[in-house]
Length: 426
Image 1 (tube, rainbow, N blue to C red):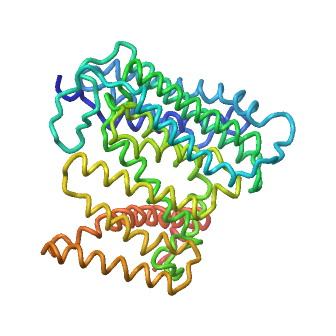
Image 2 (image 1 turned 60 degrees about the vertical axis):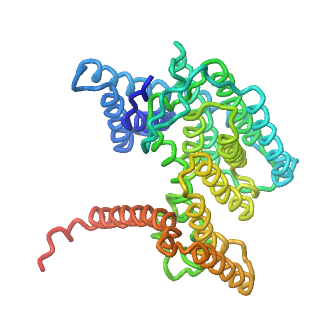
């Protein structure tokens, strides 16, 4: 079987319709509908309609869009009772254990879950014919299971909305950061553990994840965006370049990252998790382990461990081994590029949030430069030296787009607040 048809419209529907459900949750809890609800609902409905091939099936596309909008509204109203249960009737007071004390056991549990995947993971009788083209995902069964699509999508949506409900409840309670765990943290851990178990079972019996319907670029882009938004989120602590705070993102962007990064990061990890099957091949182990740790992080909201710079840096840096293992498996020859490119981000940005002495930072930077020059020089591959800039250019490039959008929104708000400026003569 050739590669199944996928489209980004369905990937957009998978993001914007759950977002619309969260807006409807606000409405169900007494807020007035606003432009955000109208815009997100319209985009979600449009994406669902476009995914249904409106040129060939216009009526089906229209029905899909309307069904998506109605489903988001119903999900939002259903979430009202769930969030009320998560919040509980009494104050969610922190209690032992200390969240920091759970990091190592949680990492061990995640490693054990990867081991379970290696032991009980299932492979299909035959994979699709892999073209090798960019964007074609190879881990798809040649013959789809009859209920695969229903199980994969319902499992993803349930997992996504459930963890977003926990984040929503925490924000509405205006919780303070503490060392100990709360009921909310245990519930979030249970939600993610349940989502993992559900996907393990779904993949064991039907194999395919969301990859049969949406492009690989949507999954790769979702988790990559975590690193890009983290630049703005961590800017107050480590700056943007070499620890300097002379060049900083707009305050609006930093506030946006602080308020919404939980939703964005949990969506990225959940969507990426359900995109892939639980395939018992070593290639998948590093990515699965990293994703499971991100689930732990999303459950530790409003604990000091959640924003521990050593822990968060570890989560960022784990993108490196997975990228290297993947490229070695595919024999793409990009292992050096990923290694040195990710390490450049560490030298330029990430290590400056650890409060390292200046001498240590100079030593690490010098060792990095010497290693890069030695590697490419020994192989007479100086023409490949610019490859180390690929990931920094990509991450800072996307950050630049976010900065421009923030500045545009600032200008719009200023015009709204001072409408007379529209009529000021030069």
